[in-house]
Length: 338
Image 1 (cartoon, rainbow, N blue to C red):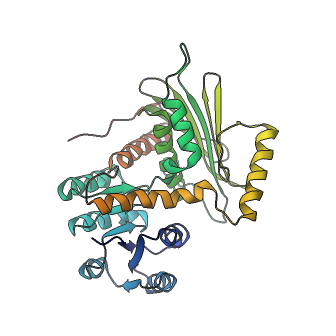
Image 2: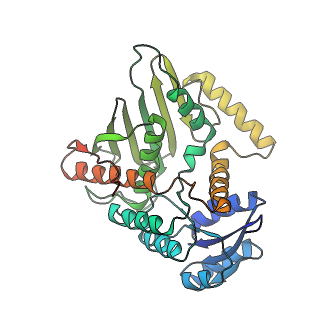
Image 3: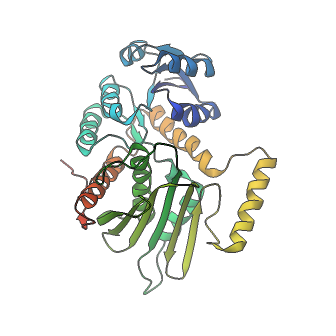
């Protein structure tokens, strides 16, 4: 393989344009060479935005060109598993948008293909590479003070309401809400460094989903997700006398809350705007892609694999069960090893 990693894109929707293309452009060692989408207009549009990219009419055509070293699966949720399995079967490493599959069964299908292919697979949990998350993860992983209680986390993930948008049936989760929960169920596991042992979920009068989780080895977390008039993404972490806060648009983890934090965030945002710089959450997509490219370049299974994606799917299954059973506390099984 040359120094440049050639990428194919399976799925050319808004996320591909908004997230993946800017990350690809930002990395000099990456080039988009092929793009597939069922819509000719979408794949042609992506190809026009990426010089040297060839629009192809099918996944098979993309693999037959032998012009890609790896692919990004950015297709709608219902198609992700089949495209990931097809890619691995063609001998091509895969970066998959989360949730990695529409069900745990499909996730296990990808895991089986990963084991057979022995190729890098990564689920795109970019928030793990958000700078403030890295700060908090290191702090929580350090030795706690004697007698310090297990950490607790409160998170809020609200999307702006759109006309006609809903949250599905009582036990159902629409695609946007499922994606948000998948991201944050993984983020909670990552910050804690522990697996979720059980959770309960309920809908509140605003049709938002409230999730309460406990962890193996101690620790609790809550997550509120849904739609509101204003978008919000905030995570508050407490560990003994330490407190951290993650906010979309902020590059900081401390101080948590208060007018001082608000003033610092405004000053930081103003400085980035004057310098035409992105915040670290936006740059986390570039860092995620770089980690995937490093694994592809090594042609070794040093990417995280499917375990994290499967753990989030199992937790999402427990959310559905709890909603269906009237907020019943449900056990979250560990990712099966067989």
